[in-house]
Image (tube, rainbow, N blue to C red; front, side, top):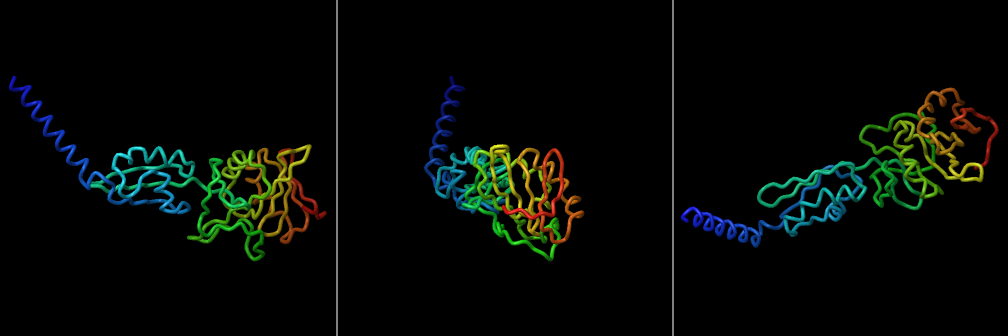
Amino acid sequence: MRRKLRFFVALFFFGVAVAAYAFSPYAKVGSVVVDGAVRVPRQEVLALSGVREGDFLGRALWARRNLLASGEFRSARVRWTFPNRIFLSVEEEEAVGLLAEGGTLLANGHVSPFVLPGSEGSLRGDRDASPVDEPPKGASPSLPRLVDVPHDLFPRLAAELAATPKEVRTAIAEVRGTPRASDPEALHLRFRDGLVAETTLRHLGRMLASFPAVRRALPDAPKGVLYLYPEGIYYSERPKSF
C-alpha cells in the first residue's frame, strides 16, 4: 500500500514539474542557430524547418523531416541545448544550373527559388582563362544558365550535370533546349571561351567527362561547332547559327 502511495505521490509531483515547465518561458524556443546554409537565407531555413523563436520546443521534433522534405538540403541535423536553444545544421543540395527565368536547379532535380551568392549565368566568355580552369579559391563557382529547357527534363538534366566534372560544368555558360522531331532532348551548349557544342541529354555527363582532352585538341578561338553524341565526337569548322 505504501509503495503504491509513493508511486502516485511521485507521479503527482512529476506531473506538476512537467506542467510547470510547459507553462514556463523555457518551454518555448529561445533562439535558433543555423549552420551550413549559404544559398538558402537564414529566415527561409527557419520557415522550412517550421521552428521559430517563441514556438513550443516540441515543434523541433519535426524540423529535420521538414528540412529534408523541402528538397533544398542533402542532410539536416537538429540539436537542442538547455534550456531552450535549437541548433539547425544543414548541408545544402548541390546547385548545378541557373534558370533563365530565375531560380536554381539542384542536383536532386528540385528547382529552388534561391540563388547561390556570387553565382552568375553570364554568357560572356573569359578569353584570358582556360575553359576548364578551377574557379578562384573562395569564389562561388559559375553555373550554366538554362534556357528553353523543357521542365520535364530537369530531373535528368540535373543528374547529368551533377555527374559532370565540376571544372567542366563551370566552363559551360549556357545550356539551351533545342528539341526537334528526331531528338526531343537536343541541347546546345555555349562555353565561356566561345566554343559552341551540339549534343543531346542522353549520356551528357559521360560525354562531357572527356571534354578537357577534346578541348585541348581544338583551336584557341574556335569558330566552328563541336558535336558531342554517344555515337561519336567531332568538330566542324563550319560555323552554325544557334
